[in-house]
Image (cartoon, rainbow, N blue to C red; front, side, top):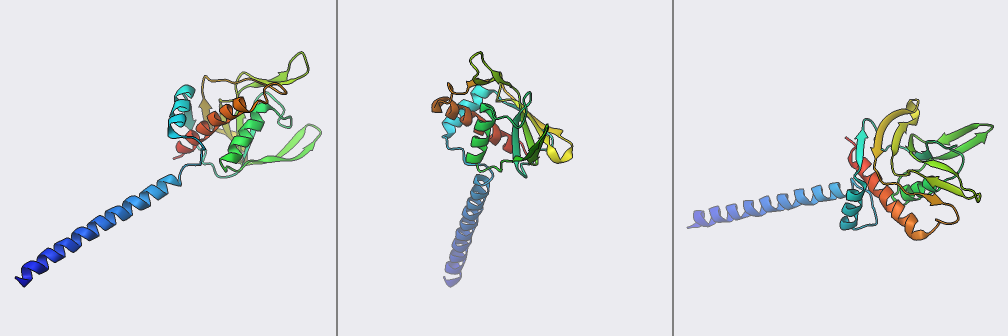
Length: 194
């Protein structure tokens, strides 16, 4: 009788240990997965809705997110501010991503502190009333490795575009919607890192 009780007790202990280790493994896995993405300040439903609307295409051949990011519009002087650059920098800051900056400007030379350049498609100009405009893009572009002679290491593209006119489009709702799109794009780029 004693041996039967001992066998049942041993099997019960093994079952408890097996369940304990399974729960421990699941707990560790869930923590490590949750730390691999950034805080986006949106529900998963909103995220999926924005991702579907963007119809995003990403090709990543070397971007690893290590180091500061400098954002610029491809057809515009890097030292001049634009709505696209301002909103991208705000979104990156809110995501706790390192943002590069201009360290020196002299004559036609701009020195920046960054490892990566997010070069956005779009144009920046002014309308007939002298207001600065950003138009024709802002959500597509390429990522350049600044430490490797601006070698292109990734591209991201979408058909979505958003235009801004300074003074008129400083409205919070449009800017917040644009930043939400940026956060989805950046998160998807981070998920594409191998």
